Image 1 (spheres, rainbow, N blue to C red):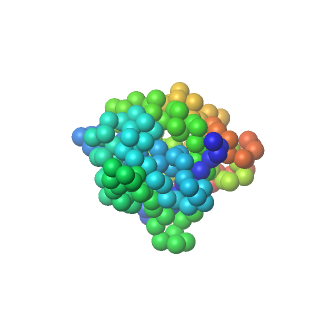
Image 2: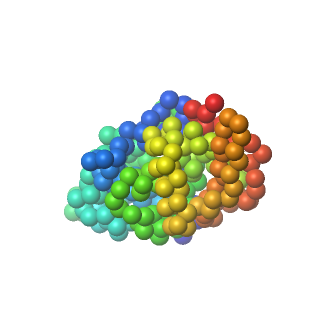
Image 3: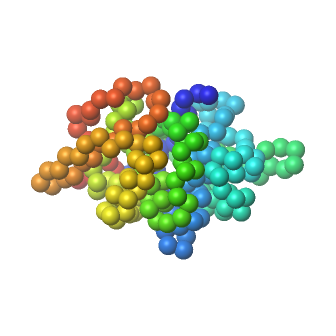
Amino acid sequence: MRPWSKLPSWWFKPGDEALVSLQGGQFAGTSQAALRVYLGLAAAERKDAASFEVEASLSDLEELTQLSRVMVLRGIHRGVEAGLLAYAPGNRKAASNFTLVRADEGAGGWAKLPRRQVIERIPKLPHRGVSALVALKLYLILLAGRHNNNAVVALQHKTLRDKSGAQANQIRAGISLLAAAGLIHVVTEDIGADYQVQRYQIVGQLEAPRRWNETPKPGPLTV
């Protein structure tokens, strides 16, 4: 298995609220399903590793996400509504075609996603509750916020809140779930007069050394 795959990161750019639009409350289950399907597709085998197109059946997605078929379908449609996915349904003889949407050319780059960790550990996150939804959002944010030459990512708490639409206590709960699942390691925290920065190590083979960022990577909404 190739250790990592390409994940679009356009939704990390200034002004985009794709993740914020995936709401909690009565919508939390469907929002979670959308992110689980998105991550599952990103980790799935691709005919062309350089592309963002994936062929997968509903059964494949059930296995990758550990969701029921009903929730897989809800997740697909919600992912399309959020602008994360494009979907061409298949039939009995052909798998469905999915595209991890990149938005406009030049609007955003891509991040490395550790495939084995996503396939094995994302399904183990709780399937209910706002904390699990926030954890999924934070994982995507941390992947997108990581410098390519560093396995450790530093982001201000304000960036995590703004890009996820979550409150401070929900951020802490989400980070705890990711750490408990073995998806990240919480390395250290720096607190200054006007900022709070946490450093996290992404678990997985990303072909990057583990070292400190000299300064936090500026988030799209960071001041």
